[in-house]
Length: 154
Image (cartoon, rainbow, N blue to C red; front, side):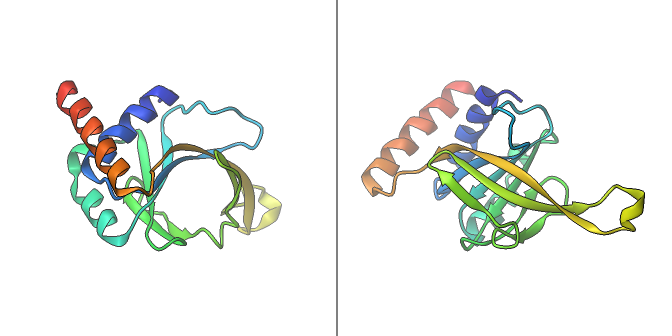
């Protein structure tokens, strides 16, 4: 998916759950620019009720997108996609380096034969796709605009 496709998907996501605080595109190599080829991985900052709602929104589920939801500022779980994911931003050593970029260390199986099944930590990069405004008035305006876009697309 191209960045514009990710942004379009994020708008559809927000029309269902305005309580999402931010959406990040994750799983990028540290030196690569933001261009998401399927499958892409997104990380949304929200709450446990939002996670449950997203799990129930089958029309949003896509084989091209894995969506992880941070429910308490640290712990996250899959809204859909490979069921392998659940974890902690602290264990990932998530560090936001500026307003639109973050780095983290994702654990994965070391593929080298000599590793004997050890877990390696792989440095990854994340890009901010969308961040909400904390103002209730602004949030309502954003909701109305996104709802209009979604209705026009259907």
